[in-house]
Image (cartoon, rainbow, N blue to C red):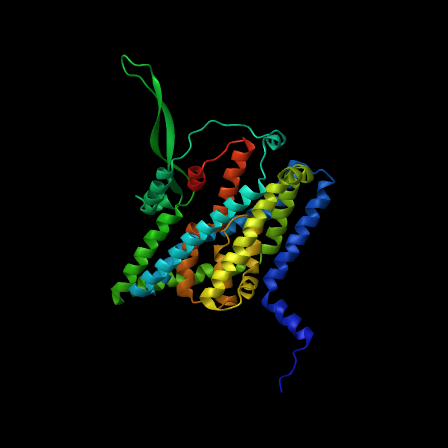
Length: 380
């Protein structure tokens, strides 16, 4: 006969399995309570900086681990996959990423045009100033992706990424009035060129996988680096409750009038959250169920810790090391799959960003009372 598991045992098992999630939730609650409580005391800027210091250190530790983790994981995963499996996985990965991003943008378009959160009257209340600047061309955006995928210098790609900038030039031709033209320049800005590093690591790992014994030591080096970085990740995870509490407290104290801001932006927030909820709980969950025939909400529960950290830090790349740990230990996924798909997904798969950019672009047009054509909607 099957014995019923006592409730106390179930709770202990849950607490043991979701230990870091419970600690992080405690940090979230403590950060909100502390932030709202200290707002009444009107703390100085120096006090706010000191309160936010543990959170800043936590974010720096996560960002520090992203680059070595990405390089080691992709090279190791790519080296351990056969050429056929690698090609199939890459095709499926990019197909899903591109299709879900398109669906996400479409959902954002439907919600922002239906709810219509922006109006010219709201613009004065938000104190938005118009700025004349050159708009990036769609063609240049795609060309920038291709250029960044093949960096000239790998060391430079670790700290900088390129983009097309525009410079106004006055063209004077004899016998004709001077006219302004836009000149394209290839510029650089601070930030890791993740796409270029991912492409190189996939190719490099694939080459290691085909060379056999002569490069076995090199494969073991990257595998060892991967294990060592994961060990550091486990240590950083213990900083999560304090780091999350510090980040939330500092941000609550730094923002102006929360009530006024939310009142002015309420429709935009509702539009954004509605679209994200449909994307996550309908589109993504349905896709997961169709592919795996498993309960998607159980899978989301296993990743709740990562989702909470990503929400608080407002970034996906810094929590990539935590994502590896949850997928491999909580969900039991194959390392060869996670080490290939996750870094690519963090860089390429931006479903939430696609929805956010779509909603915000149309929201700004609504603020300025600009009627967009079908072609402009498609371009967005």
